[in-house]
Image (cartoon, rainbow, N blue to C red; front, side):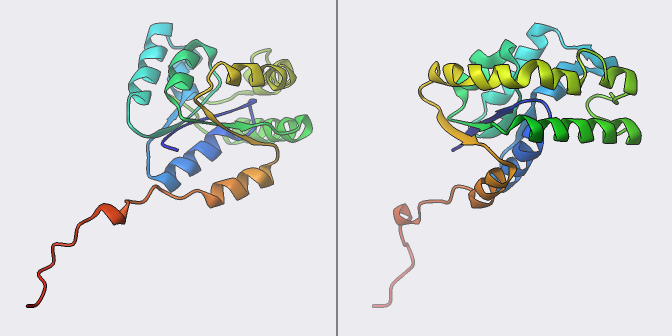
Length: 188
């Protein structure tokens, strides 16, 4: 597991899990949202977004999170492992709702100077409404998408507790010490 893509509905915790996994494995972390949402909530040009994904995924090892179809051919093709946060609707809805409320109240900076505001949070493209538009559809469509990339190892996590246990079990790759020759001088 060296090139890992973390997917899931908005609010499921993709970025949180991906950052933690990248830290455990000692590899870079990349985030689709950070590349897509330019200053002033302007969407990145398609070529610019794809170039970011292409450059990031050209590395030998990484963890990336995001569901953007506009670069699926790059990320999914180059990943060796797909971690799918497939949590029940009520769990994800509560997470999206509380995360959005916290971000609006604290004015936490997200990407490129952007902050969530109440108007944007309740808009059709806002996280809570986006959840209702995508959660169940993604649950239906993801298995067929995964089947298009048979080289991927699928890790389907169905609860936050399952995700925490899986994350806790991850360790960085270790060197194979059996191939290291001992050149220590031996007494005669």
